[in-house]
Image (tube, rainbow, N blue to C red; front, side, top):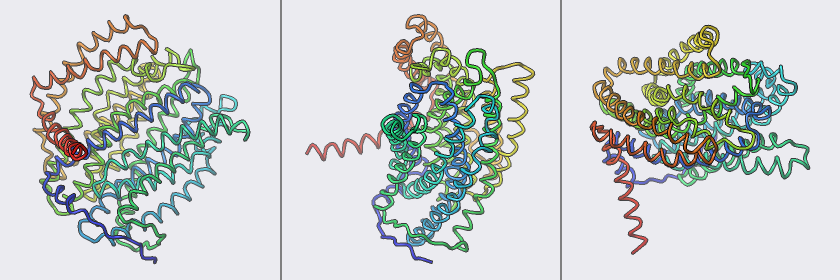
Length: 565
């Protein structure tokens, strides 16, 4: 076995700051940093989506690209950012708390080596089985000449993205365990810029000379973007003293613990991805009177992109910031601190996602129209995508809360409970579409509504299991927080809907009109919610202000004063 090269570097001031700051306040501060970084990342992602919508719309080529990207993306959620992150971060954090940095570096190298071997083989297998995977996810593509073949080809091009993103997910976990959240959070900016920039260059500049279609160029751009996302984080790890060496030792206790946590996590994530496969399969077979078979998959995809914005800004941010903190609490058997940190994280998620969900429902059409409506993406696509967005948004609070609750089980070395909860949701995702589509004769929006209902039930089950496991979950605090925030958000949404109806008539259903409407109504929504929250005494706003805004302003002012002097 090769001994990893680790340069020991410490940051005493950072360690003292972490110790002196209450864990729940540290989580809010770290989550705030992640949210700001993710917002910048999402902006570049928005540009990427606008380019795709303008060039390809809800078309034959874009449907094939979405499916081709979704297959390695599903694998990424299954193996990389899902199971691997949930199992690796608590184990690596425990190693930092109870061991030495040299031991942590050895564990990191073992995991990196295992990822290269195992996920690399999975990529090769996925490329070989691409026709079967495309048929499994979208059997309806075979009814359109050439669509199935294009989806298979694009899938094979983009499958190496899985290996790159798995290594990037491990790098993110290592940086988060060291208290570094901004660097990994903005790493996806490099993916967005790289995938668009190199995709356009390959597709439109080099493509004509290489015999590549524009959509093929965008697929190659995805792989280049993944490499840039990984490289950015490896630079930071290098500065922390980590040097990769290929090592192989399956008997290492840390690696065995990660493998033991990953197996049920993979099964649970497999159940979650099975639900996406079921929905995609249903969507590929639906027929729209205007778009035929080429619309539903894209409309659901565009709507989910909007849901993923608050999900990443709030749910993923708090989950990333919370997991190392609760892992430290679990490692020291401080379960009172564990409960407080978890409850405060959920309270902040309620504060952010309940009003966000109502804004997405109320202003879904102008939001989608302002971003996507141009080129091949017309007003009909806007209205259909907005309908899907409204249904998805009903489950936004549950989406984000589940992102907080699931990692808490892994910090407690319990991967079986989230696995069984996730597996049980498959039946719901099979039954509800049949009910909505066949009995109630709903359209493609039934699939988005099914997802919202299923994740809502899953979230409630996770919360109840965790409450029993911890002997409580600050239930009174969470109930009061939820009701107050929901009341404030409702007070905001009622006049906002009235203003939206008036603004829609005044500005019109054009992209420019939607932009004007949002420029007026988004500030109105913020003012209405803050006024209602102040009236109802929502305490989380003050806590967020004291934990993130004030320290950030003091740090900025101190640095600005140094530069000025």
